[in-house]
Length: 634
Image 1: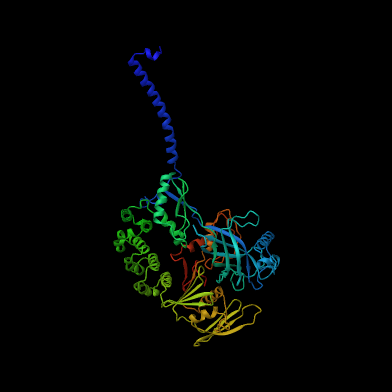
Image 2: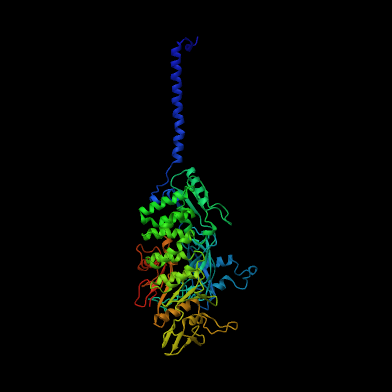
């Protein structure tokens, strides 16, 4: 008889219970192992995010944006159309690389239409010059977005000027310049006419003080592919990643022409982001809205009220509050309208910024009040916000009176806004498709010139005239202007080149007539007198006249930010030789600079940093009373 059959019933039950307990205990040990491993995997922390209370419940409280950095791109290019000012001199490795690139693009091949000339013959021509091209692709830029690029002669080149040249399409790659076979994939390309900085350098060696070996191409660069943006989760979690993906796609649904959804989860660690077409010109604004997007999209009013309370308890979070309300959308408007009149200016400004971007018509009157009476930085913000508001005569009428404001940057902000709103008060004239002249009615004379984007000269006070008597010469006497006191016209002497015959013309002393005269080329179709200066030459002539005291008022030049962005964005180990620094506002600019060669910032770069943050509008001002280090020299 088996042993268990001989055991008393009570003993049998006890043994069974012990056995079952042992099995259960073993089972519990086994079952505990997998959930523990799974929980550790799901809740693994990648990094810690510590955000302000006002940002809790947003995308930025759960993830960080990666891939949203400016990308420096460079390449060797060929400038054509020079009038004998190019050179065949260049480093051997650069010449070999350029010959290879030109052959690859079909130069010398009859089948491509470039069979008449060989790559060697082009490089040996004095009408061509090999240059370095560099620019900065904006963070998260979509395909086909344009950006400005810098162009300068290759070190060791014998070129004397890039004036009047045009850059052939040049591929731009990330990282330092290389001429070998290990080329990075091109991210952009650049081409177009070169704009030479027309301002005299303080320590220039040239006769007329203008560096013609360095220039820029306004909006000459084009992005070839979408720049990838990705959200990296602070904590690995498929559930949280899915929730964030859903919140983003609810706020930014797919638009026409958008191939995939705005947010697409890759894993519990990462979410890929596509910039919607409506934000292609301002990807930075999109990323700000993205990171401030609420995760709880079902209760926008309650979220807007929470942000309001957080702002009132800490007005220093005004910028974050404005972004949060904008990300919530129009349902936030009722929660902020009474703040348009709030006594604290920071709080009032946060509400007005959000209200304007959310197209609340009730924000117009408080914005006009802010534009007139607020702190200068807030005045400029308010003026810029009014540019995108709907058709409203009160906006145009309210801003026109500020064209006479004592603050230069306020006047310029008003011009920008009225020009964007196509106010008929602003005169517009195209000069041979080279540049635009805007005429602004104002009691305060001023000239403003653009150095990025659209070539533009803005004249405040249409009645401004050249002061007479005038006896003026510039550029080694290639340009001379003369008039006696009381004469209404000017005698203009112009010699296009050293060996060219001189031209003598008569021009009106009013700047609104003189500026088009300087840029216009006389033809049979357009017989109006003119001397055909380029945009940069026209600016240079006006600046020289102003420096000599023959143009009253202020002269304001938009800052050149291309080099500043390149210096800040490039990696420390990247080294690129550059020509003399051509920013008109930097003293001591005659020496070459090599990025990454000096562990301490040079005085030029330190000055550039200060100039770059000089004001909300990003422009520098020249007052008649003296020279500032961040202004065009007088």
